[in-house]
Structure formats: structure tokens, C-alpha cells
Amino acid sequence: MGLELYLDLHSQPCRAVYIFAKKNNIAFEFKLVDLRAGQQFSEEFGKVNALRVVPAIKDGDFTLGESVAILKYLAGKYQSPDHWYPADLQKRARVDEYLSWQHMTIRYHGSRIFMFRGLLPALTGQPIPKDRMDEALEDLQKSMQIFEDKFLQGKPYIVGEKVSLADLVALVELMQPLGTGVDPLEGWPKLIEWRERVKGDVGKALFDEAHATLMKSKISIKALNCNSPMMQQLAKTLQKRYK
Image 1 (cartoon, one colour):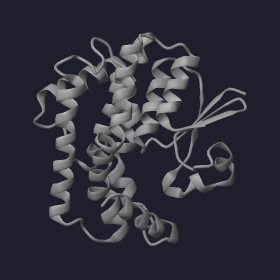
Image 2 (cartoon, one colour; image 1 turned 45 degrees about the vertical axis):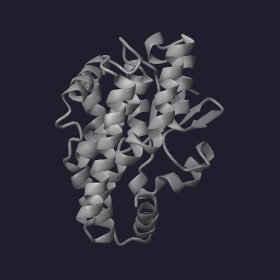
Image 3 (cartoon, rainbow, N blue to C red; image 1 turned 60 degrees about the vertical axis):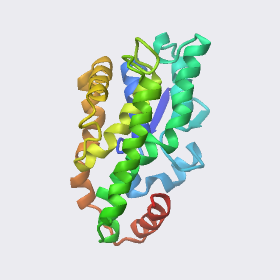
């Protein structure tokens, strides 16, 4: 049995795994887990990931969740070019440093804007108050300043001269607000240059393919049955998570 990737490309971590696998010519079977249809709660998917979140993989009898763990596993098993996850201990530590930092900063704040501008107003029928929206935008800007000053430091990439897993994970997260029409990199020329550099390394066609679902988010959100019990429960969960 070959490698199976369980993904929904609305999800930033899923896009990172998808792009990495495709870029490195890793053969896999795409298994769609439609989060908006609740497929993560199916009995079948529960056997792959008891936490019921994507991405997840099944490689023979081996299953694995959590995108960072998956990316490292794929890089090791399929011996991807060293720049993705360097063998050099200090370079690898820099990749790991960013991957550890980003969860509650770039990832959380970018997701919060997507939820505030897109999914939560649709689910609740109420717009997010302006002060909360302004706060969310300000928080993301603060995280981006740290990203530029501490992690990029004027370098082409987070770990020097070549793209790494850290760059890929950072960029898919910073793309998320674009699904609601906000480009967080507007007014950040160095970060725009970095974005275009990473997209070029990945391949623009592959990058755009992976983000096509995100760019149609406004349409897919309008199609949701927001009054269903599952969607109302989702609304409560998201309201607690994204305050």
C-alpha cells in the first residue's frame, strides 16, 4: 500500500504538505477530508487520526498527524534535497526554531483574520466588531515585524541562501487572509520579495494550484448550510478559539 495524504486544501498546513510532496516528486494518493462537510468525524478517518484533524498520512500500516511532524517525516524518508531540512545541526535548529514559534503567532493571527472576515460572520450572522478586527490586524502586523527582523534578518530565506520547510510553512500561513481579500504583506516590500522568491522556488503553477481552493473561499462560505447543528457547533468552537 502506497502513501496516502489526507488533506483539505482550505487548510494552511495541508497546503504545506501537499506542496512539499508534489515539489519533491513524492508519489501519493490524495484523500480529501472535507472539513466543512464534517468528514473528519467519519469512522474511516478516525482510524487514521484519532485527533480528527488534517493533515494526516498513512504509509502502509504507519499513520501520522501534525503537519510539522509529517513534513519532517517525508523529508527524511524520501531524502529530499538537504536545503528543505538541513543535516547541519545549527541550520536545522533554525528551521525548528521558526516551526516552533509560528503556531501562536503567524499561524494564529493569520487564521484569526480569515475567521473574522469570512467564516465567523457567515456562521453567526453577525459581523465582527471593528475594534476586534483592528486588533487582529495589528497582532498579525506585530508578528510579521518579528518575522522580518528576527527570522529573515535581510536574508533571502529564513535559513540563508535556500528555501526550507520554515519558509514554506510561513508562506502558506501568510496566504490565508488573502482568502478573504486581505493581503497582509501589502506595505512590506522585503516580505513581498521573499514571498515571490519562495513561490518561484516551489513553482508558481504548483503554488497557485495548491491555493486555488483558498481563493474561492468567499464562494464556498456562501454555500454553507450555516443553520445546521454541525455548523452551529463549529461556530461555538471558533468563537472560543479566536477571541
